[in-house]
Image 1: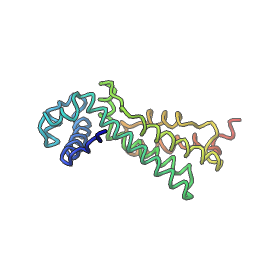
Image 2: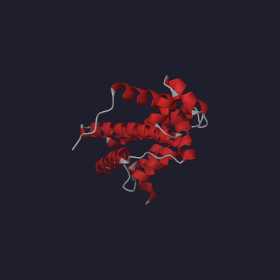
Image 3: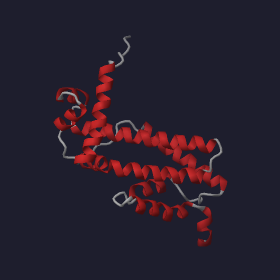
Length: 191
C-alpha cells in the first residue's frame, strides 16, 4: 500500500496565495472578476491557478470553506474562554459581533458563492462551529443568562440578517438592540 505524498511546499504556498488573492479580488471587484485577474493578483500563472482550482466554482467554494473554518476556530476559542470562566453571554455576543464585522469584508465573496452555487465541500468545519455555538448557548442557558428557547439556528439567523451594508456605528447599534433578545432577563416579562 502506497502512502499519499504530501504536497510540495511551493504548491502549498501557491494555493494559499491563490485563496488570499481570490478573497481579496472577489471582495474588491465582485464575483465577475476573472480567473486571470486572480492569478495575476496571486503572482502565479493562470495554469497554476487552474491546477489547484479547475473551475471558478471550485475556487469560490475553497474561499468560502476557509471563511467557515475561521468562524469555527473563533467559536471554539470563545467556548474555551467560557470553559475557563468567561460569561457565555458575553462570549456569544462578542462572537456575533466579530462574525458580522468579518462579513462586511466578505460580502462579495458570499455573493459570489451564492451566485455560483458554491458550497464548502467539507462540512466538518461547519459542524465544528455549530457545535461550539451550541455549547456556548447551553452554557449561557445553564447560567440563566441566555433565554431557554435560543438555538444555533437563531444565531445563524442573526448572522445572516445583520446590517452588513451599514456603517460601523449602525452595526454596533444593531448588536446592542438584538442582544437583549438573547437574554433570559429581558424576556421574562413576555410570559
